Image (cartoon, rainbow, N blue to C red; front, side, top):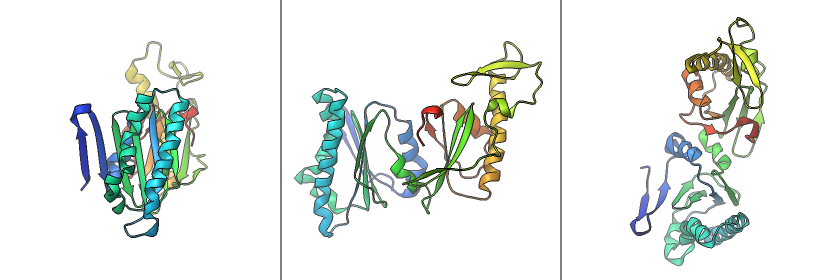
Length: 282
């Protein structure tokens, strides 16, 4: 069952969704959905938890209280009004209250909470986390990546028109792989095209000359990127071989669906991480 409970405060138009999920469901929906939320500020809280009966279970609410205090400090540094801070942190503070002590008697190994104004999610997960509070314009999801595969490993393919990067990752570590088989940018991929049929495509810092004549339609420009990504896809499959570990795409929003059209890697996740790659910190 995906949802263990859902609470809706109709009077205040706030939806607080509390979820206990299977890893399969998490991979297919929740993590993918969380990557799409762009509502500044976003608060991400991670902490280890303990099963009922363990002596350390009494420490868990205290640990969450400390994380909430740290998140409050970061929100104050952003100059947010007290009312906004209180609205964002309210769901986490509710979990600390004595009347919610039963919540702490049904924990897994780790707890992750994601808070924005008016919406909150928390997940009981079979993965322990170091205590961490992060405030940003998106949720901080890196600690969850280790849950994407049973052995904790997965891949990230970072896409841009200026180049591509392939990384192997776990919850704690990301390592960039040698990816010499891939063209390092759209211009390199299409360098042998007919030079008499060209168009300028802006790649975020410079313009690249590629195929198609003056006034080329949007469909022609898409086809150019399509052919570039076909070469990248071949390089991915050659580099990763017969791996069945998940592959996560990262890149600006319009590039991801184009890549999916040519993808032949069997375990590409349905959604990716929307980010401008020159500023995407792997």
